[in-house]
Length: 463
Ligand code: AMP
Image (cartoon, rainbow, N blue to C red; front, side, top):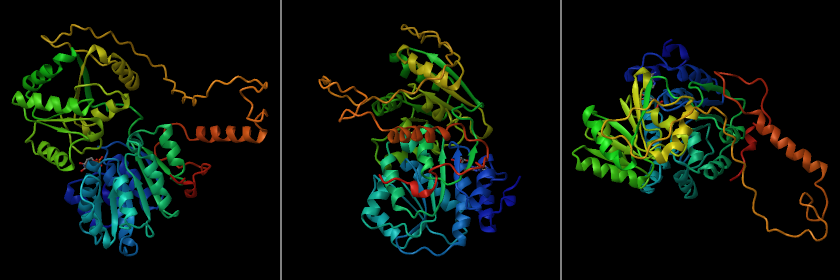
């Protein structure tokens, strides 16, 4: 298949050719015609699948056919969880749209707001934004959504993980009800599906990676090691294997700083990228790493999410993540686009639980390679593959003061001593049912027959 069969116009095909892309990736082959038709899309796709071009190319085409943008207005809004991802998507929009008379802008926090306000004054066709800064700009009357035609949520799962749900709901409440919605997420948890229900309308569902499955082209193993020996072991791995580039994950910002200093002391150039670093420092670290001036990029999960660093030969988990899904995201940085990568984890005895959680999620035991000279004193227990599905934790009931039911009122009764009415009971049952309907994995380009209840755009609740 070639790009020319997907219905894209000449200026866009030219920009694609200039990038050297010959064949659309699977997500592009499915998403591009759907977006061009004006359909809503819900896609399960990680960074590295070509998802950005998957939504940007048809988006630009649709925008190039519509009306001119007015002052302070936006015609398409792309929301991303992190500044880095916003910058990367903004770059893609500029690259793919370079032969079109469209304006685009990127706005995120951590930098001055005034230049962003100036840029928005003339209006922009595509605005890429992180949620908090977008709301700041809205509150300062710098951006308006009267002309908004398309909303894109990129890495929706990470936005929820980062606590942006209220901001997102607030933003949804500001947008025109009639619009096209595109939602991308690496995983489709029940929480994401609940958000999608009030957002997308009769969507085409696309899934290009199996839910929570690690890429098959990534070789994975662990080195059992004592916590205190991890830095020395990493140094030896870098030297023995002559790694020119590696992305190393730590659990904490402190840990990232400490490790960066340690490596620098050993003569291995390293830079840390995490939420406490200024935007300038993060951009510089990434640029230095991409240019090969920095050999080791040490990152925390949030900072690394969505980083477009192509085909890294190896990713190292200096610490295992607390959330097993992050392991899958992390190792998605290597072995992209058909290249084989290595994902190596340094695991100490304290991390046995995290290791078991990861192994359960990826449904395989990670091979163990003890390193001579680094055999742990605190032994890592043997793993067993436990494929039982973990029950989600029940939400805690709010604590109620213990009161004696002196008047004979039972706990199921309401304050006046009545049983809940039949009407209320029906209402509760209905809520449970509607949540259950949307569960399950999105199939490949499935067009659900019936419109799910509550999927119309009016349902966007106010935050
Ligand atoms: P993304 O998943 O959007 O972050 O894209 C991952 C990388 O794949 C980016 O560096 C793109 O430049 C590249 N890419 C996107 N589409 C294609 C394609 N059809 N052929 C080759 N490379 C692509």
